[in-house]
Image 1 (spheres, rainbow, N blue to C red):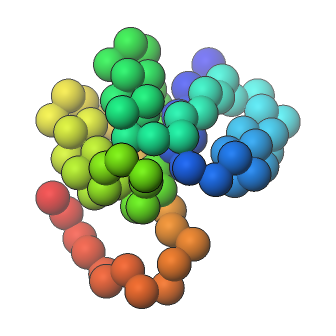
Image 2 (tube, helix red, strand yellow; image 1 turned 30 degrees about the vertical axis):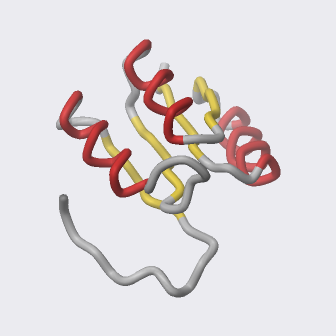
Length: 91
C-alpha cells in the first residue's frame, strides 16, 4: 500500500487531506510540526510527503532537505496557504 505523510500545522488541513487520501486507499499519517514530521519519517518508509512550507518549529524547506538527505527517492510536494512565498526549485 502507498504510504503518505501529511505535514501541516493546521489540523483542518491535515484532516481534509488525510480523509481524501484514505478514500483512495492510501495509508496516511499526519504530523503538525517539523520535529514530529522527522520522527515519523525516520520510523517508516514513505512513498509521498505533503509538506507545509511554514511550520511552527522549523521551515518546511529545511525539513525537505533533511528528508531528501535520508531518502533521495521520496516524492515530496510542498504546500502553502500563503501567497508571499518565492518560487524555489531544488535544495
